[in-house]
Structures are given as structure tokens and as C-alpha cells.
Length: 149
Image (cartoon, rainbow, N blue to C red; front, side, top):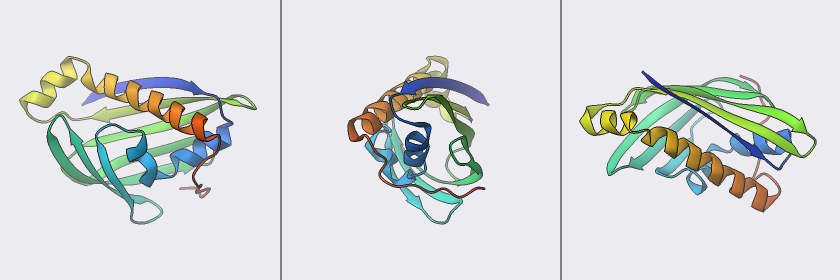
């Protein structure tokens, strides 16, 4: 398994950042290569991705969700193997540090070469920057799910 960890500071409250992250169906608006995310239950999402010309579909199970603190997941079916967590650290009333940690299993020669070249790390860095732009330009979340898993 390969690993990546990236962080970014966003100029919104921890609650706003966390609430937006729970709106999985909005991920295509700031995650490059994510075509669609369907929320199938409180803890199950279905993903359709297109990265580097490779289309994949998979399910991800939310394994832990603590409001204003953490969302963790693992894939449970489909064409991808990964697990990860995003954490939210309050810096002050209007700033939050968002950290994304992910483990993934590159499949095939192209993905393994891409992993060695740091493409996944760059993808995650870009996704976090787009999340920052997305949430800061809105100033408010598009919704929220405050349940605990």
C-alpha cells in the first residue's frame, strides 16, 4: 500500500469546513477526476472516477465520523482499494487546518509509475487547494450531516 498525507489551512470555521466535507455529492466540484459520488446511506457512498484515462467505480464505507473532528473511510467493493481519513483542527474561530491521509493500492503498471512519480500526492494537494477555494468563495457550507459513526 502507498500512502499520502497533505494539509491545508482554510479561512472558515471548523464547523463550516467539516459540514462541507460531509456533503460527499459535492466532491466533483473540487476533486479532479471524481465524476460522481452518490450517498447511498449514512455510511455508504458510491464513487465514479476518471483519472488518467482510467474509469473506476467503487463503494466506500464511512468507518468513523466525529463532528468537527474526523471522517474516515475504506473501500468495500469495486475497482479501487483505499482507506483514509480527513481531520479538522480548529486554529481559531475563522481558520481550520484540514489534513487528508490516504492509503491506496496502485494497480497496473501505469498507476504504479504514477505513484512513484508523486502523481497521487499532487492530485491530493490540488484537491485540497480546490476545496479551500470552494469553501472560502462560498463562505458557507452547502449542507451538513452531524451524525456520529
